Amino acid sequence: MAAISTEPKGIHKIPNEILVNILALVPFVPPSPSCPNKPDSLGSHDRLKQVDHRFRDVVDSAALRLQTARRQFPEQAALRGLITVSATELVDISLLDSNIRLATDKVLKKEARESTQRAIFTSLHLLSYMSSLVDDERRDLTNACLFVWAKKDLFHSRWLQVLRHALHRMFDHFFPTIEDFANMLPNDPMSIMTHSLVIQLLYQYDIRPSPEWAGMLRRRCFESAILLQNHAGPVYAKILAEDLSDLVDNIGALHDRINSILVHRLVIAAGARPEVAEVEFKDDLDFVRYMQWRMLSEEREDEIVNAPTSRLSQISIPYVREASNDSSLHYKFEMCNAGDTPSISIREMKGAGSFLRKAFATISKQGVPNHLERYAEARGLFSIMSMSDDNDETEDDEDVDSADEDNGSDDEDEAESDVDEDDDGMDEDGEV
Image (cartoon, rainbow, N blue to C red; front, side, top):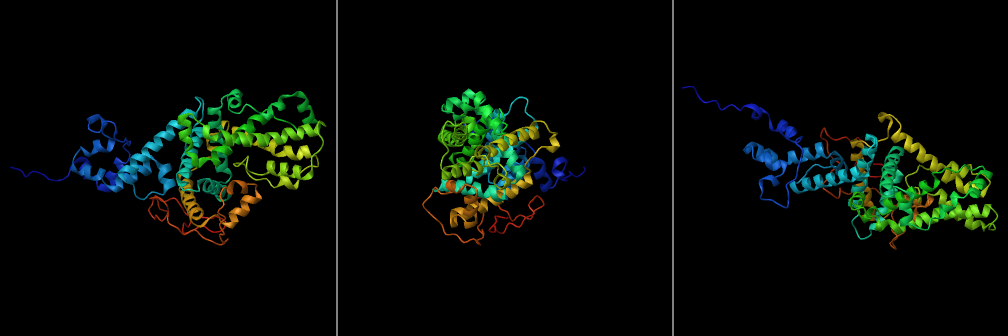
């Protein structure tokens, strides 16, 4: 009688390392918590464990959980810098990804391009991760400082465009008509912009008003409120709940201020009100030039250097540019070829996660660096960073050497690592 062969057959010939990579591609479905004992409530990994003891060992391995996270949830794996994933964490990661996909689908229009879908999806992941970092008692201050630092050293031009386009699509979802916005903020100073005499006055000063001015200002106030109140809960949750109630006051205050400045100047230019003191004009001009109401815009020094003599014209320049920027943004995402559309790569998200963890560690443990205070003050953002009486005296040359606050790590030297930068610290200018 021939001896029975004990040589592995079929898939059992595959080494564990390759089997891990294969099983990591099986769509991860978490178990149903409501019916844990029913066969149909098993998760995808639980079903794989039923094949045999080898599959059970592989499925229970840390290697499979990590590879599953990296292959199926790359945005979160990159942002968190994951090197280990527990079974509970993998379920949480899966649920978060599912919620963000649901929120993205709610915001998308039927005719939306893939570039818009990607912009919304990656932006919600990024904002959600930033929100998860801000969990201390000084969250107002920490949230503001974290965003300002990101604006200073992380969000370059392309990132700003992606975030803005995503937030614009969210605005359109919450406020599909002017009436929807008016119902939230009934007192809209920009209603004066519909008056023909106002249009004539603007043209008299060689200002070409766009029909989109009022819409642009509403979108700017919405995006600033989202960014400054990101600690109040992730944006995707607001989309799923269809609830912006905790942002209304912030949107209303900013909307009233930025609109009233322009309306006030129009009334003065029309001769209906005498000119105001120089100090008041300077305050108005500083506010419209500064970044608090347009936090995702690129900075333009020529707005100050080459300002015209007319006060109304000086005030209106930022409004004109912002409306023009929105038209350009719409073209880039909705009209350009897919290859020309701005996007955020997984590699960049990995670097962003490292940056944000280190910035958060500095702010929460050592206070606000002086160089960041100077940056914020020069751009009119200091007021949003002055929400605490705790005035930290942090030296300019301080570095960030603290370890990551979560289970992520930036010291990986595996092949999957996409970060070329030295992650040992963050210098005065925020360079990672």
